[in-house]
Image 1 (spheres, one colour):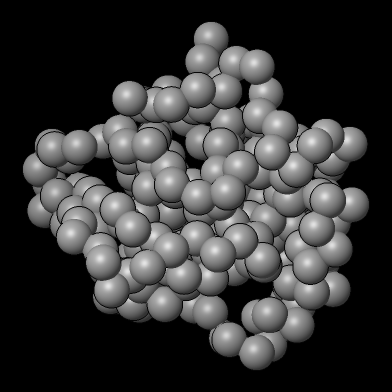
Image 2 (image 1 turned 90 degrees about the horizontal axis):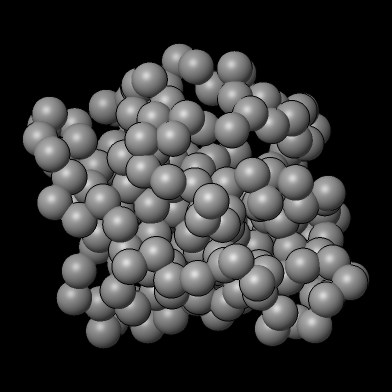
Length: 193
């Protein structure tokens, strides 16, 4: 079995604490027509470089029933900036239009097969995976971006079309696994295409 969730797979459940003080599971998000789960963090330059384009995408599709949920699975033992307390501060400062959940056990990152930050997973109404990979082709420098794969996938999905590129390689820093070197990747983690 591949490390990363395969297309058409059902979204794995979770129960994670959010920066708003509540705990959320997949069932709590059932009202969303489309669910975009993305693995993110506080410090990665690919995340901070693309947060505003992710914000624009989340806001653009909100009225069409698309819900964005960010999950931070990075170990604060690797980067203290990725602690829950710093997540709360970051949300307070930037007021992002998504739930921001903390995967302190890293079990959710393993269940989804998160490779990098950011790494996007788009689920349809049946909560089947229809797109996974990058948001844009240059998340570190949005001014050099030439394609927004996430937006393209959402446009096609919402129009009832087949997604042209359902699989792309995420671009960013690797997930910071607890007790491992900052650049360590699981042995079975590999490029998606």
